[in-house]
Length: 251
Length: 309
Image (cartoon, rainbow over all chains, first blue to last red; front, side, top):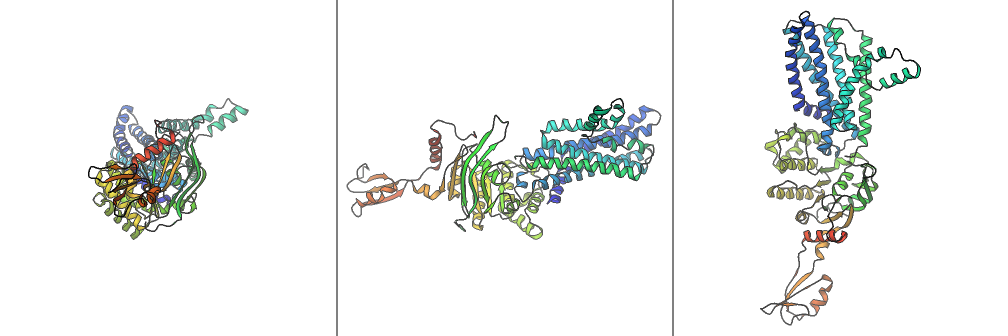
């Protein structure tokens, strides 16, 4: 049941205008990235490669937020879910199927982005190593975490507010990685409180390996596994919250 | 009435439901509703806009939670989601995924209803034929008009040959030709053994299709029963010759007419000499007028109809 819903969701979101439009925009942005390389003068290839990697993250998150927030709210507002939930489908089947379908389309989008990026970088003569693929994998995980965030916010609030909260979560998620450096002067309860509040937001900087990959600085298998488990735990938490909220939702 | 037995397929017993808005603005959509849909019947659910029809249907389909009272579906409490494999549902003004084609959408929903392989293919072909969707199988639903969406909606509802077909305003957005076709398809489904439960405020549709009915207003059931019993309450009209009875209207040709209730049949006819009766027929109740008068009588003339309060 879950896979049937996931499969239909994936087909629907891959064919959506938001998904295809953002992929097209990504392509344009990648082509324009060379301009930044020219402007930088020295290390133009490195700058171009860094921008291409960053674009994968930015556009991946945009696709996740755009399709993720539209996914459940459109179902509720347009009542498309009536014909699904009036069948022998449990609500948690529906939420999990939706998330897996969304994840499938995002992974497909990320693979396309990585391929476009690699082909472009090769064509422009930039050096790309295997570490770059690993960076791409971690970016993909970051995008999946953001997909689960968008699904969760959408279940809790309106689409517009959900988009704003998703982008705020993205910004905070990248900021919390820097927090330990900012809290050096705090002690005791204050430090504990600030650390506890920071722990409520997924630390998205853990998925940023692209800058290190650019300079071919290796990552250990244990470190990689730790980051993957961290991402999967956050995804599980957000999908669980979404399921609990959705189970009680009046449709 | 094919396959009609006394066992109900859907019952509401003392069901109340309140929409949780903010706490100062709660909407009491249903108030102690009792209704019973007999198996094999075609049950018309009548009510003005906002009377509580869609809320009742959503509760029956498990789309709303938190009601008071008991609801049973196919003889079981509605909590068991597996029961819904035996129910087909057409929501009011249905929307579907824009980017899926008719064929793949039907396959998707068929899978969710437990159909697979050859059974699923045969079921899809059946609804293609019934609703003329075969030529549209590769077309995406985003390009469909309101009427076409309604056709697809009925197709997905009957796809898995449900025992109970719940249709919320099924004729909405249809042209006269498709209204007629929908009635044919619904009649076919009933012949197959399905029970029809549908809401409408177009009373001629109820008259054409239903044998049972329920009138709901402001979340309360005003009355329910067999349509034949309601129509049987219509007065009789007698045309006779000879000496006119008291209160009769005499025509220029010497015949006279008298209208009287069913309860006076024996008295009126017994007083006539043999051969005096030329014609005796039951007057037709205009269901439209009956419904409006019934609702107005409940709330007092001039009050607004419907409106969840």
